[in-house]
Amino acid sequence: MTAGSGSRTVDAGLCLLDRQIVDCDGALVAKVDDLAIEESAAGFHVVALLCGPTALGPRLGGRLGVWVVAMARRLRPGDDARPFTIPLSDVRRYGAAIELRVRVEDLPPLRLEQWLEEKVVAQIPGSGHAPK
Amino acid sequence: MRLSDLLGAEVRAADGSSLGTVHDVRLRQELGSGLSAEGAGSFWVDALVVGPGALGARLGYARRELGGPWPLDRLMARLARRSVVIDVRDVAERDGRVIRLRRAADRAS
Image (cartoon, rainbow over all chains, first blue to last red; front, top):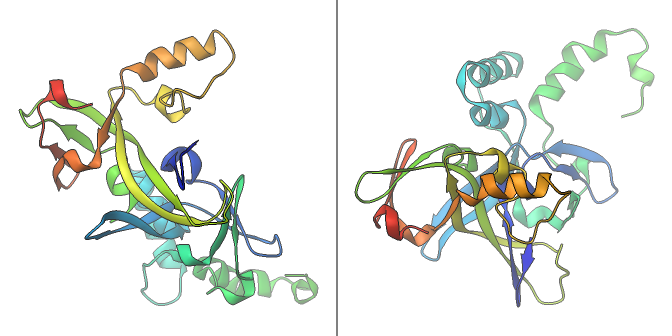
């Protein structure tokens, strides 16, 4: 990373992809699997961090990527293929981990994890006592 | 568009010659007043790191300020030296996994 007056440059693949995202209390949220980029009159800018298998699959590419996306779609409720999205406005700090301004409870749940929690983990005897 | 749409895409100069694939995307982070270097801010796509081999660039050796243990440093820097940094304003169009530039290969750096 290089810093100038009021700006610095970062290589997205090196400095943002695969970074751990933590909430404002330090709880683990997810890892950055991709970035959403939008075009405006001033150029292309990053608008959100994308997480989860439907974000990771296209990045992996090839048969493995197609398989990851297909499995995620089969295991999630409904037919929504959108990845878990964290707007950049929710980010407080970029460092070794990406720190959010919000709590993980205030974010929409990771759909695949929600499905696994309901269909798999909840069926295990005694799982109701496990801390979140 | 996603970052993964750019990573791995082939870059061709205006004359049709291939410069390699996109190894990384260089972002410019605009920092607000009172924020540290790690503070939040908007990220703008500034340039594409393009080259024939990805290993040196993936490990960060395309950036001059990155040092490392000798002789790994020299080897990776040599691999990364073949990478060129393309200003995003030189991109003419993106057609699927192919990015076409406005400039000829000898002027694209």
